[in-house]
Amino acid sequence: MSGDRIDSWLDELGLPSRDPGRPETSAGRFADGGWYKWEVAGALDGSSVRRLVEFLQSHDVHVHQITNTVGTMRYLDEQILDLVATCAQLEIQLRMAVGPRGLHDIGGQKLGSSSVAAASAYRLRGASALRTGVDDVLHAIELGVRGFLVFDEGLLTVLAQLRAGGHLPAGIRLKASSNMGAANPAHARLLVEAGADSVNLQRDLDVRMIAAVRAATDAALDLHTDNPPSTGGFLRGYEIGEIVRVAAPVYLKTGNAAQDFSETAPTERELAAIAHQLLLDHQLLTRLFPTATPSETPEF
Image (tube, rainbow, N blue to C red):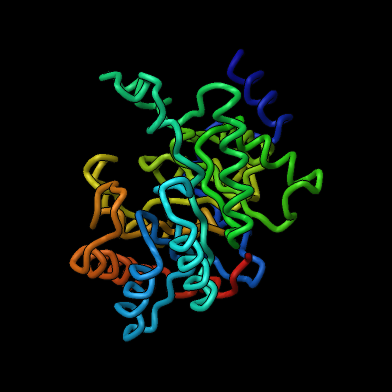
């Protein structure tokens, strides 16, 4: 039967042929043995990171990674330096988006009303945009940034090759954005092979699908525990224990439901809501999977 042949072929490629009925516990961990890290993403600057940490301190909960999704091109150097210094002082990993030039250039892709047009609007258009994307990263590295959120597969490949060739620091980290659309084991592994150190999967994958991806790659996964209405409005608190169990090592991206995508730093009220959502998720994870420990050691 063709199904049996396909199963055999995928097995030879090291890929699962089905989403598992009963997902196995992941054997993967971060370098210090932790299962997960808390991440907050958005238009975060130095002052908003400091205030967010203040909200969490009384509960003894640590945010491990901040991802600024606006893009290096939208900040003054002094703002990036402040964000870098703040995260270093608080022992928080920092990633910054490259660009995202695709949403701001003169191309009409982002103006299309269809979902097909929107899906590719973050990609870089033309060789000059690719060159400028590399320049964004090089300049950010000079300012102290060591982690990057990448929206374009071509740029990801170029940055990984430049890193391997010694043109960029060996210690920089590259995250494949969820805008790349990774939703199956082969796609996730392809992005890792292209140079991604972690892969942000699509927001609507169930636990079995996540487990299938984990079976195909050892790289860290990035998973949203909640989302604003524009990306589905999902609240997945009761799944967090299972997500950590099958996906470790995993970055748990929390707090997005408190603020839709914006180029302005969160307000005081929004920061309080982000902290509240992280604490809710922490409370559920502690109750539903108490043996899972966080990774408290910064990787970069």
